[in-house]
Image (cartoon, rainbow, N blue to C red; front, side, top):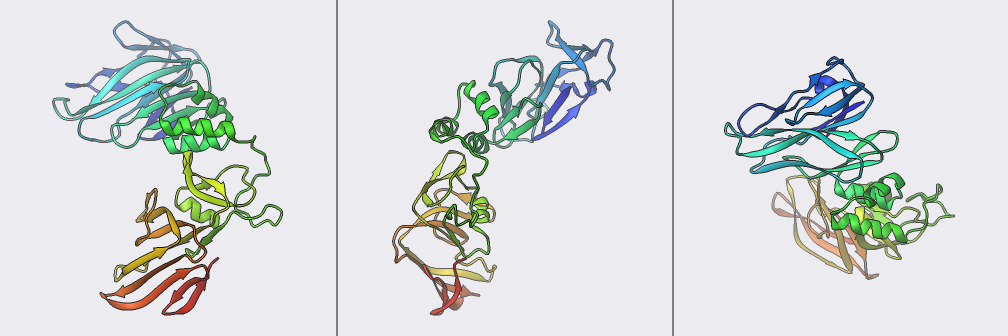
Length: 336
């Protein structure tokens, strides 16, 4: 079987897809030689040649082609690093940018997988680095570092086994491994933010017309696996998990009503900002400003107060506190 990984996508390919790199200055093209197989073959074996080429013959090897070309970025360097034993680089071609090939290069390599689970780290020419994970069922998943850490903490045993064999890991992944070692085994009856009286409730109060689970997901956060009751401390753990504790999170949005509206004189008391989101971008730790805010309650008399402007003129005085949202002194909406 031949897997083709390119442009952050995964598909199953054939022998014809094992064309690595491109011709030209600063580039290198590796075109496979077929011996006893055709371009449509999907069951092949790969033999490297002394000149850096590759010969494909009948066989049943597990091959993975990883192309790091993902768009131009100045001085881009697309590269692949194997992270688990049993991954053999068969051949490598290169893409490049510019007529002279001097504006960055992109590795395009063919790998033989001799054991699974398998893990690579891939840095494309544009965008964040990704982890390529192949499990025992030969399913391939592309994971940003944050999601890799999250799956470790969530109890993904196969992935964790592969990561423990790797070296030169990011700090977030090392912290996720250490955190996972402190957690009890994951049970099948662990839910999440369900309002079950036998489990208690993870406390997330929201003025965003969303459930607590939807609020956390929108900010890229999640409760720890197997967390049965209680609240949060507001501390973000590796993988985007919130540390369990006795605190309550509140979610609200100072002025998200449209371009004609703005906020003036915003002040708050008794809240610790955890995350802020505006136009799809999330900041950790957050701030209390225009957009959507997730904050930890620290004082019982907490509040957020501001004046809402419309077309530059005063429109309403807003107060958000433990009761809900007040509009010009009247309670307009209670917490959900």
